[in-house]
Length: 340
View 1 (tube, rainbow, N blue to C red):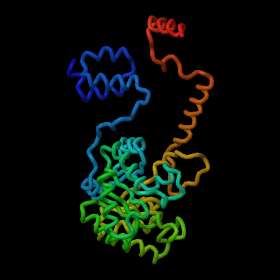
View 2: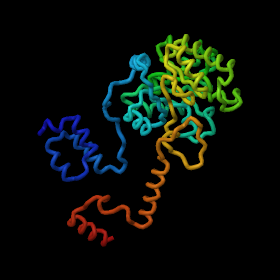
View 3: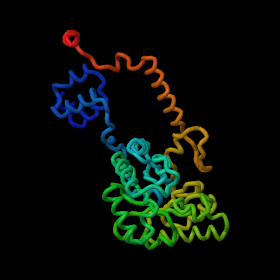
View 4: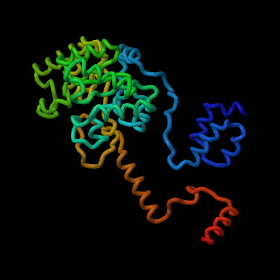
């Protein structure tokens, strides 16, 4: 029986125990620390998420990503910006979790990605890293943190690895960023490049416009792809490029392309989690390439409205949501309170 409540199984019990009777039965077989954990889970008012579960699959590495690419297995990428969004993406089996600078809009309510800072990104990277056990993690370098020089970019990349606790970084730009990518990769930090539509440069591009729609434009995207590959990136995001152009570019490369609005001929796909899960109110603009797989907004709204209604009507909390006190102790308290 003592073996039944080993440390690992006690941690499961911390999550699953729901009644004082079960706790009381288990208590003789638990260490003091395990009892404290169980009591905290049962009686605490904040119920922390705590550490993520052990991974049911092998850790994704640069090597396993290269293996998937060589076998022609599509690489799945999803953005996350905090512990819960990273946790669900990891458990769902994502190969890569990207802490994208899109969190400026979807998590921080900013107008565009140009507002987000290195400090903002590092905070979110750490949160995501705590939840991720199997997926490969990538942190997005924000605008202004890498464009000045390769040396500036390397300093920022080191911060993301050491302080952000991610495993690689992403930066935007084509052949003009090749020396920067080379500088970072030579320091031992994997780089995911980003070409095609580069949102941080939307003002120079005339807005969020599809790239490579002409022969010359498509050739520029291909030249960018070849340049960042030569610089040493392990892969590249290919955004808002005609599907046929993206397929041709993908076939010309020896590293994977991760498409977003670039068709299914890429080596993998990435979407913003808030977009694809439907965690936004009706009427919000979403790009053409987004497929909405759920309606988290409606589920959350319904749950919160039900909570409000039950509080107003005093249906919540019900007796099963309250903590017990013995009749003797309650009577003693009443007598003491009456004396005041």
